Length: 285
Image 1 (cartoon, rainbow, N blue to C red):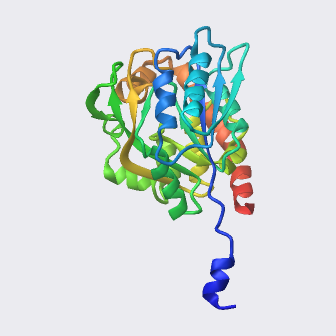
Image 2: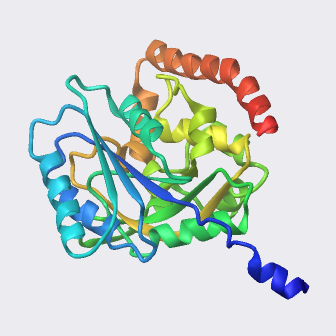
Image 3: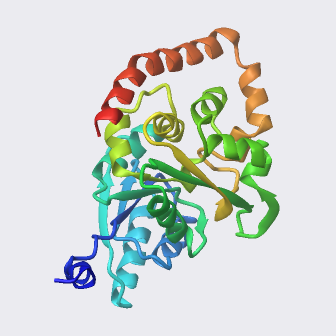
């Protein structure tokens, strides 16, 4: 058999499957639009996992209706809804959703944003280009409660310039992320292997901070300068720009010294205890 015929006879490599995980809590106001933009991706997703943290509104029903309408229009997506009777909190709720995802690649989603139609396609392409990558993140356009552009970006608000972005995209990622988190979960896609390395998530770390720091020592991070989502600011965000930018950082400095030092110590202890084992497991993968 010729080389060309042999190549033609070989099966095409299986395409990575993509899950989306969403942590919800009383998100009825915006969650329908968020889900519809997930379902309108140019690279369709295979699964949506919703971990609902004891909502008392119609959040879950709205998600289920959006998926049902998508299927009735000919779309195909699996939906897995996890319902918490008692709230777990943001980090534990996202960890639960991440552990339930079955896709090779897993995109994180807030309950109130708007995805650009190629958000998934851009991230999937980055993984294909750099197979060792563990996590892809991106910039975001800030939008208001009505979805109107606020003429600002997430990276601009956080002071992430091209030099800093390149550092996180390269060998200096761990050092930069140790100083402060620069990446936002709502823009992330990661390999499911990363969840297995990172779990269980330390309660002293926010889920996206922990995933980023673990990715930095276990395969690397790619950071797209393109805004791939509209990151909605509406005054009720669980984690928004005000908590990530200068205002939030100043508020943390104003916190009682004992409280701040205790929080930093807990994070340092968790990192010191977990990181050597994570790095060793990553080397064996």
